[in-house]
Image 1: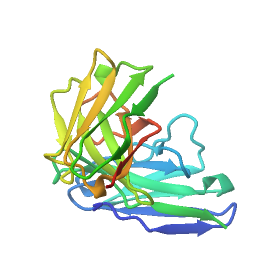
Image 2: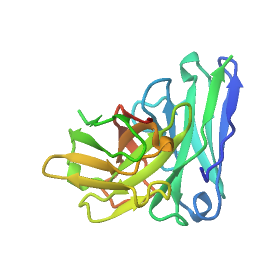
Image 3: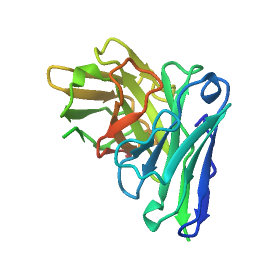
Image 4: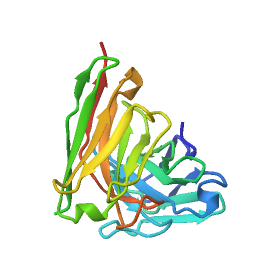
Length: 112
Length: 123
Protein backbone atom coordinates (compact mmCIF):
# COMPACT_ATOMS: atom_id res chain seq x y z
CA UNK A 1 0.00 0.00 0.00
CA UNK A 2 1.78 3.08 -1.31
CA UNK A 3 2.01 6.24 0.77
CA UNK A 4 2.62 8.39 -2.32
CA UNK A 5 -0.43 9.01 -4.51
CA UNK A 6 -0.30 9.63 -8.27
CA UNK A 7 -3.10 9.92 -10.84
CA UNK A 8 -3.62 6.55 -12.59
CA UNK A 9 -3.34 8.08 -16.03
CA UNK A 10 -2.67 11.25 -17.96
CA UNK A 11 -2.75 11.82 -21.71
CA UNK A 12 -1.82 14.42 -24.25
CA UNK A 13 -1.30 15.00 -27.93
CA UNK A 14 2.19 15.11 -29.41
CA UNK A 15 3.86 18.41 -28.60
CA UNK A 16 1.67 19.14 -25.61
CA UNK A 17 2.69 19.51 -21.98
CA UNK A 18 1.51 17.07 -19.32
CA UNK A 19 2.13 17.01 -15.59
CA UNK A 20 2.04 14.17 -13.07
CA UNK A 21 1.48 14.87 -9.40
CA UNK A 22 2.86 12.90 -6.47
CA UNK A 23 1.12 13.60 -3.18
CA UNK A 24 2.65 12.54 0.10
CA UNK A 25 2.52 13.61 3.73
CA UNK A 26 4.51 15.12 6.58
CA UNK A 27 6.45 11.89 7.12
CA UNK A 28 7.86 11.71 3.59
CA UNK A 29 7.84 14.55 1.04
CA UNK A 30 6.70 17.10 3.62
CA UNK A 31 9.55 16.11 5.94
CA UNK A 32 12.04 17.39 3.38
CA UNK A 33 13.07 14.09 1.82
CA UNK A 34 14.04 14.18 -1.83
CA UNK A 35 11.66 13.00 -4.55
CA UNK A 36 12.85 11.07 -7.56
CA UNK A 37 11.08 10.03 -10.76
CA UNK A 38 11.40 6.89 -12.89
CA UNK A 39 10.19 6.01 -16.37
CA UNK A 40 9.26 2.41 -17.10
CA UNK A 41 8.74 1.41 -20.71
CA UNK A 42 6.69 -1.75 -21.31
CA UNK A 43 8.58 -4.91 -20.40
CA UNK A 44 11.68 -3.09 -19.16
CA UNK A 45 13.23 -2.10 -15.85
CA UNK A 46 12.60 1.38 -14.48
CA UNK A 47 14.99 4.14 -15.51
CA UNK A 48 15.96 7.12 -13.37
CA UNK A 49 14.47 10.26 -14.90
CA UNK A 50 14.75 12.94 -12.19
CA UNK A 51 16.70 12.82 -8.92
CA UNK A 52 16.81 15.18 -5.98
CA UNK A 53 13.45 16.76 -6.89
CA UNK A 54 14.60 18.53 -10.05
CA UNK A 55 17.89 17.17 -11.39
CA UNK A 56 18.23 15.25 -14.63
CA UNK A 57 20.80 12.47 -15.03
CA UNK A 58 23.04 12.71 -18.05
CA UNK A 59 21.21 11.69 -21.20
CA UNK A 60 17.70 12.57 -20.04
CA UNK A 61 16.14 15.17 -22.36
CA UNK A 62 15.40 18.59 -20.88
CA UNK A 63 11.75 18.05 -21.85
CA UNK A 64 11.48 16.34 -18.47
CA UNK A 65 11.48 18.51 -15.36
CA UNK A 66 10.64 18.04 -11.71
CA UNK A 67 9.56 20.23 -8.84
CA UNK A 68 8.57 19.88 -5.21
CA UNK A 69 6.48 22.00 -2.86
CA UNK A 70 5.19 21.16 0.58
CA UNK A 71 3.91 17.60 0.68
CA UNK A 72 3.76 17.19 -3.10
CA UNK A 73 5.98 16.91 -6.14
CA UNK A 74 5.38 17.10 -9.87
CA UNK A 75 6.89 15.79 -13.07
CA UNK A 76 6.34 17.80 -16.23
CA UNK A 77 6.86 16.58 -19.76
CA UNK A 78 6.90 19.31 -22.40
CA UNK A 79 6.83 18.69 -26.13
CA UNK A 80 5.28 15.26 -25.58
CA UNK A 81 6.59 12.58 -27.95
CA UNK A 82 5.30 9.11 -28.86
CA UNK A 83 8.32 7.54 -27.16
CA UNK A 84 7.26 9.10 -23.83
CA UNK A 85 4.34 6.70 -23.59
CA UNK A 86 5.24 4.75 -20.46
CA UNK A 87 4.56 4.33 -16.74
CA UNK A 88 6.04 6.93 -14.41
CA UNK A 89 6.72 6.51 -10.68
CA UNK A 90 7.75 8.94 -7.98
CA UNK A 91 9.88 7.75 -5.08
CA UNK A 92 10.91 9.17 -1.72
CA UNK A 93 11.66 8.09 1.84
CA UNK A 94 9.26 7.77 4.74
CA UNK A 95 10.41 8.31 8.32
CA UNK A 96 7.38 6.55 9.79
CA UNK A 97 8.46 3.27 8.19
CA UNK A 98 11.75 1.70 9.28
CA UNK A 99 14.38 2.66 6.73
CA UNK A 100 11.75 2.60 4.08
CA UNK A 101 11.99 3.94 0.58
CA UNK A 102 8.53 4.40 -0.86
CA UNK A 103 7.14 4.54 -4.39
CA UNK A 104 4.15 6.30 -5.79
CA UNK A 105 1.18 4.41 -7.18
CA UNK A 106 2.33 5.02 -10.75
CA UNK A 107 0.91 6.97 -13.70
CA UNK A 108 0.38 5.73 -17.24
CA UNK A 109 1.13 8.42 -19.81
CA UNK A 110 -0.66 7.96 -23.11
CA UNK A 111 0.28 9.93 -26.21
CA UNK A 112 -2.89 10.48 -28.23
CA UNK B 1 29.92 -0.38 -17.78
CA UNK B 2 27.90 -0.34 -14.56
CA UNK B 3 25.67 -3.39 -14.53
CA UNK B 4 23.42 -5.46 -12.26
CA UNK B 5 22.36 -8.97 -13.20
CA UNK B 6 19.74 -10.84 -11.18
CA UNK B 7 19.26 -14.59 -11.09
CA UNK B 8 17.53 -17.26 -9.03
CA UNK B 9 13.89 -16.65 -9.87
CA UNK B 10 11.48 -19.43 -10.69
CA UNK B 11 8.33 -21.30 -9.72
CA UNK B 12 7.96 -22.27 -6.06
CA UNK B 13 5.10 -23.67 -4.01
CA UNK B 14 3.43 -21.64 -1.25
CA UNK B 15 5.47 -21.98 1.93
CA UNK B 16 8.62 -22.66 -0.04
CA UNK B 17 11.94 -20.83 -0.21
CA UNK B 18 14.04 -19.21 -2.89
CA UNK B 19 17.30 -17.24 -2.93
CA UNK B 20 17.82 -14.45 -5.43
CA UNK B 21 21.25 -13.16 -6.42
CA UNK B 22 22.33 -9.90 -8.02
CA UNK B 23 25.81 -9.74 -9.52
CA UNK B 24 27.25 -6.23 -9.72
CA UNK B 25 30.01 -4.92 -11.97
CA UNK B 26 31.54 -1.64 -13.06
CA UNK B 27 31.52 0.16 -9.70
CA UNK B 28 32.91 -0.15 -6.16
CA UNK B 29 30.15 -2.40 -4.87
CA UNK B 30 31.01 -2.13 -1.18
CA UNK B 31 30.57 1.65 -1.22
CA UNK B 32 26.89 1.65 -2.15
CA UNK B 33 23.68 0.73 -0.40
CA UNK B 34 21.57 -1.67 -2.43
CA UNK B 35 17.88 -2.52 -2.49
CA UNK B 36 15.43 -5.07 -3.81
CA UNK B 37 12.29 -3.71 -5.47
CA UNK B 38 9.48 -5.89 -6.76
CA UNK B 39 6.62 -5.49 -9.21
CA UNK B 40 3.64 -7.83 -9.19
CA UNK B 41 2.12 -8.56 -12.61
CA UNK B 42 0.29 -5.48 -13.85
CA UNK B 43 1.00 -3.58 -10.62
CA UNK B 44 3.29 -0.81 -9.44
CA UNK B 45 6.73 -0.81 -7.88
CA UNK B 46 7.15 -1.88 -4.24
CA UNK B 47 10.37 -1.40 -2.28
CA UNK B 48 11.18 -4.67 -0.48
CA UNK B 49 14.47 -4.35 1.37
CA UNK B 50 17.71 -2.38 1.60
CA UNK B 51 21.21 -2.99 2.93
CA UNK B 52 24.07 -0.63 3.66
CA UNK B 53 27.37 -0.87 1.82
CA UNK B 54 29.08 -2.70 4.66
CA UNK B 55 26.10 -4.97 5.20
CA UNK B 56 25.81 -3.87 8.79
CA UNK B 57 22.37 -2.28 8.45
CA UNK B 58 19.34 -3.88 6.88
CA UNK B 59 15.78 -2.68 6.36
CA UNK B 60 12.56 -4.39 5.29
CA UNK B 61 9.06 -3.55 4.15
CA UNK B 62 6.43 -4.71 6.63
CA UNK B 63 5.06 -7.08 3.99
CA UNK B 64 8.23 -9.22 4.04
CA UNK B 65 9.66 -8.60 7.52
CA UNK B 66 10.46 -11.88 9.27
CA UNK B 67 10.28 -13.89 6.02
CA UNK B 68 12.92 -12.32 3.77
CA UNK B 69 16.60 -11.71 4.53
CA UNK B 70 18.83 -9.36 2.54
CA UNK B 71 22.59 -9.87 2.58
CA UNK B 72 25.66 -9.11 0.49
CA UNK B 73 29.10 -10.55 -0.16
CA UNK B 74 31.34 -7.61 -1.01
CA UNK B 75 34.21 -9.95 -1.92
CA UNK B 76 32.00 -11.41 -4.67
CA UNK B 77 30.22 -8.15 -5.59
CA UNK B 78 26.92 -9.92 -5.07
CA UNK B 79 23.65 -9.02 -3.36
CA UNK B 80 21.23 -11.67 -2.12
CA UNK B 81 17.62 -12.00 -1.07
CA UNK B 82 16.66 -15.12 0.86
CA UNK B 83 12.90 -15.56 0.65
CA UNK B 84 11.19 -18.00 3.02
CA UNK B 85 7.54 -18.83 3.74
CA UNK B 86 6.61 -17.59 0.30
CA UNK B 87 3.02 -16.59 -0.42
CA UNK B 88 1.05 -16.12 -3.63
CA UNK B 89 1.20 -12.37 -3.09
CA UNK B 90 5.01 -12.51 -3.34
CA UNK B 91 4.66 -13.33 -7.04
CA UNK B 92 6.49 -10.55 -8.88
CA UNK B 93 9.46 -9.49 -10.91
CA UNK B 94 12.25 -8.75 -8.44
CA UNK B 95 14.76 -6.02 -9.33
CA UNK B 96 17.97 -5.16 -7.56
CA UNK B 97 18.82 -1.47 -7.57
CA UNK B 98 21.84 0.63 -6.64
CA UNK B 99 21.74 3.89 -4.70
CA UNK B 100 23.05 6.83 -6.69
CA UNK B 101 25.48 8.10 -4.06
CA UNK B 102 27.97 6.20 -1.86
CA UNK B 103 26.16 6.89 1.41
CA UNK B 104 24.19 4.90 3.92
CA UNK B 105 20.58 3.90 3.21
CA UNK B 106 18.76 7.21 2.79
CA UNK B 107 16.34 9.08 0.57
CA UNK B 108 18.71 8.67 -2.35
CA UNK B 109 17.56 7.64 -5.82
CA UNK B 110 18.22 4.34 -7.58
CA UNK B 111 20.43 5.10 -10.56
CA UNK B 112 21.09 1.57 -11.81
CA UNK B 113 18.57 -1.30 -12.03
CA UNK B 114 18.96 -4.90 -13.03
CA UNK B 115 16.76 -6.49 -15.68
CA UNK B 116 14.72 -8.34 -13.06
CA UNK B 117 14.02 -11.97 -12.23
CA UNK B 118 10.52 -13.45 -12.06
CA UNK B 119 9.33 -15.25 -8.95
CA UNK B 120 6.07 -17.19 -9.18
CA UNK B 121 4.52 -18.66 -6.04
CA UNK B 122 1.88 -21.20 -6.98
CA UNK B 123 0.86 -24.76 -6.34
